[in-house]
Image (tube, rainbow, N blue to C red; front, side, top):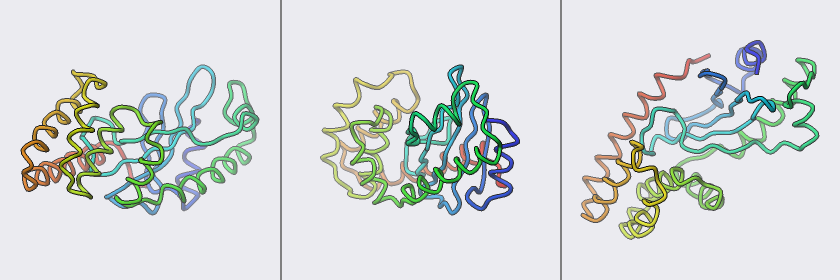
Length: 208
């Protein structure tokens, strides 16, 4: 996505509050957005065209180097994808901006989430979640429900995770805390996660 388009989206509309670019990916933050559950959309450039995706970043998730927990494709018809996002497509700037804004308004409405509605959203889409997204789902469920029996679901997930990923190490530690059933220790650890996630956020996003 051209920087000029991103600038018009972030500077000349009231739907986004912040953005950042890494390599060939832009991520934009919906406004309003709370520190508890932030969300937005992103654009990644590939040889076949532009990937248009949504993302969610609750502060209750296992810390990582990137500021998101959940990624998913924005619902776009094949016709619109070819016209607006396909390789070699050439819509006018105004056409492209109108298309993106129309899609973003729908996505923003569906991602206006708090902790409880996020768990409901993840539960409804559970089969589509990656293994790491499922790990974050278990963490936030515990934060809401304080249910130690989640350890059974958590242990089944471990073999599906990359053993060398820092999130996997934190997830394994979390499982041991679940087994100990010491709620205060678990909540203290989650509060530390929140602080780490805020640092990751501040290191990436620039307010408009």
